[in-house]
Structures are given as structure tokens and as C-alpha cells.
Length: 94
Image: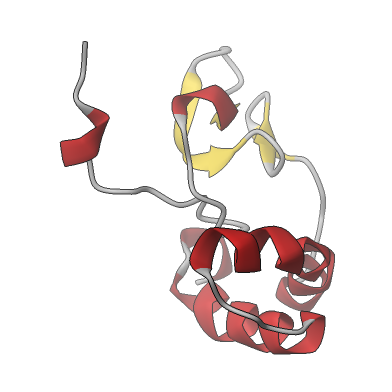
């Protein structure tokens, strides 16, 4: 069994969500895609044709979950601004 504690945390290269084996996206051949989550990438294609702004707006609704997991207290708008700073570093938005 692989030791996940020593594995560097990977993030979806579209939405920035932490990737776990359970939520890996899928390629056209059904194999796991290690760059994207299942919510962003399924069967070899992106699940939505979002702009970066639209993706940040969509993901901002999960600010409570983010705050809970990080101990931060961001508002939805603050979180959206943080996402828009972070997204240009992700593969999908380069």
C-alpha cells in the first residue's frame, strides 16, 4: 500500500481542488487522469466550457468548505479574488 503522507499534495489543474484517487478525472479510454478532478474532466474532455472568471465564480460557492479546511475566514468575494490569483498557475489557464 502506498504511503500517502509522503506523497506531495496534488491539485486539480482546472479548479484547484486537492486531488485524491477517489476524485481523479478520467481519460477517453477510461483511465485515470492525474491532472484534473472528475468534476472538471470526464471521459477525456472538460465537463464545462468555463472562462477563468466563471470557474472562480462557481468555486467561490465552496468558500465555507475552504475556510473549514484551512482555518481561514474569507468571504465569498475574497475567496474569488484569491482563486483568480491562483488559477493562472494551473495548466488549464496557462
